[in-house]
Length: 194
Image 1 (cartoon, rainbow, N blue to C red):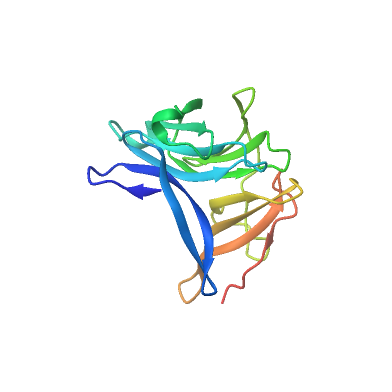
Image 2 (cartoon, rainbow, N blue to C red; image 1 turned 135 degrees about the horizontal axis):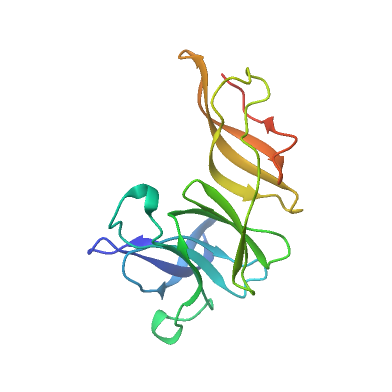
């Protein structure tokens, strides 16, 4: 995505070519031209569509924000010949998109929620999970705050950044990488507290 002078962002597509051993963007063109903010573009696994999150300007309290939406377009076409298709609206602020291997389901991180969206049926199901706590720290610590979750290539696990407060300002406070099963079980911290 790229920022326009008015503060809006658009989604662009480009090819890649090699030149003197470097990979260089080539043939850039605007794929999406909507007002407000368009973020986190992702190709469907088969390359047939480009999906992205759209965020309207905040006009009320942050906790009640529902100005997010999920859209898609055909790749390889300029925006004027390629109207966007709304998949779902009334999402909180979209933070990350990640496809399941079947190419039909998309994990959408929005607000503090995770939903599984069936992009063909245009339905969403909350991804139920318990509060997650670092398995190597005392259980009385606050639950992890999740950021940037992605689905594993086999569709059975998540990887994400989790914020912890170890209780010791010199050690183990900050963002760390975790993995778990979709239901939150088998939680494992991948990066060391150091």
